[in-house]
Image 1: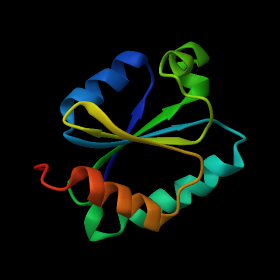
Image 2: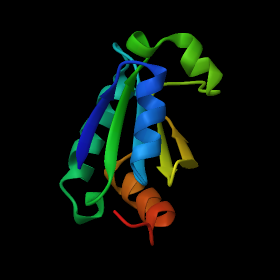
Image 3: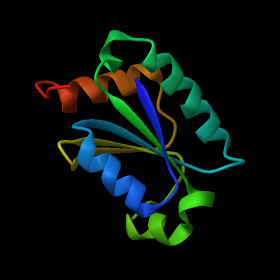
Length: 113
């Protein structure tokens, strides 16, 4: 699984446009749930379901609170699944590797890598 890092709102928009199967991890420092989600994403990345999926890491402290508020994000971590540039699902809070796999299968099936 390809991992990208956004340092601006433009980086986010560009990644969403460029990757037909994109997970976006909205997180911040000093967030226990964010660290746990990072471990889940690492485990998910080692599975066959991660093939052709890109991961975009968007850190609150870098991109800014206004950007997060503009997206309607209410908590970190939040994991969004973008299919062909459109948000297909938003999963707030910690997600286990199994939950991530189920979401990817449900929302990305049939999308070319």
